[in-house]
Length: 492
Ligand SMILES: Nc1ncnc2c1ncn2[C@@H]1O[C@H](COP(=O)(O)OP(=O)(O)OP(=O)(O)O)[C@@H](O)[C@H]1O
Image (cartoon, rainbow, N blue to C red):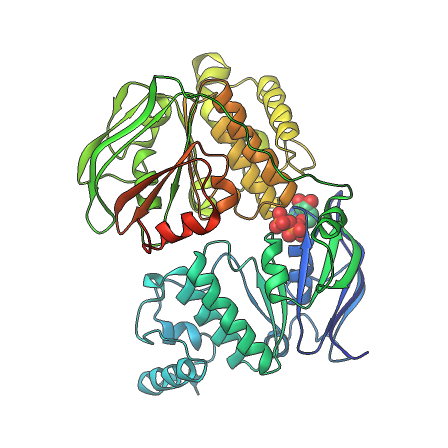
């Protein structure tokens, strides 16, 4: 068989960690091939090797039967492979046109702006990307940004594109549009490698799937006819049952409330309350205002009007430390910016909120910090060398778990989690949702803000937002179809 892309017997070590241990992948020309595995299985490490960003310690990479170019020959790599990362590589302060022709806009040292814009418009039109070439890239939404990145990749002549968790920050309709585009690219003969923790997406868009587990290649199979359970057990090494959410009775005490909240362009006239012993969901499309509202409740945004109360204390709007002091824990949407400090260790990141409490006079005893961190590493199954490892060295999903640990560490009275399971594997997802339910059993009240129906299943009721307003309070027992219809404004 002629493979378009092959990585054979790859070994890659980072200090004591073996990220890839003789693993590999073989992708046939024109297929969309999924790569799946638990957090820390080695997927991103393989991506960095397939894109020439890292050299393997052992093993080889071939494109169309030819050995991969030298690492320094960036142009040769760009012609062979491109990657659309979850985290953008686009420069926000530049225009779309400048981003498209970054590093190649000069003509003997001169930048011809008019020509550059014309070429950018032509390129966007070729790939049917409906984005203004002169818009600032920073003003683009996630979906438009990804399309610009795909167009840029193809414009270098690459016939192989890696999509690394591209749907993690897209809502339902945007995911459908991405899949339509991927199908069109496939018809044009473009080969794709698709990384996702959403196995239903793998079944929908891919023809083959490769599973990595603990740095090794486990299996490669056609997707058609592969039972879901078999795929999950290849990933986890054991049979995994579906998550069963628990039932409970809410208390009387309101632990989190927003009243009369409005923020221009985001949401209007919102009243919400979460009681102790209750999990409330917040759902809606990308433009519904749900994330803006949640960010207001945790102090990341200041509303134009209205008040926020945490555990009975009225907190100053837009004041995160005040909200935390009042007893709230939260998982922000963007873990790269607000979630963790990459250079600090797992223990330091996870225990930031209790720095005040663990030791006297603001000094945290290293032994106690370590003990608490070890317990959280175990509870949330964080794959790390230990509490002293910098979070920046962890795989994406494991970094997300550290953010989660931080939200839970101080036994919060109120918990707000925004897209809590983004980038997290099937089994870890269960551990995270279970830890929210545990906190609620201990008396907290939780708000789960999510694009994932699976996350919302643990909720006692789901508030659905549409165009900045709460349009429905849906009790437990909804079907996917019912909830999506309300979210898309089809049904009230
Ligand atoms: N720069 C680094 N320094 C130290 N360890 C690293 C580094 N990069 C990756 N690792 C380790 O290599 C292992 C594999 O990580 P990798 O990011 O490839 O996993 P992944 O399968 O992409 O996980 P996820 O689904 O969470 O994104 C992990 O144990 C990770 O901590």
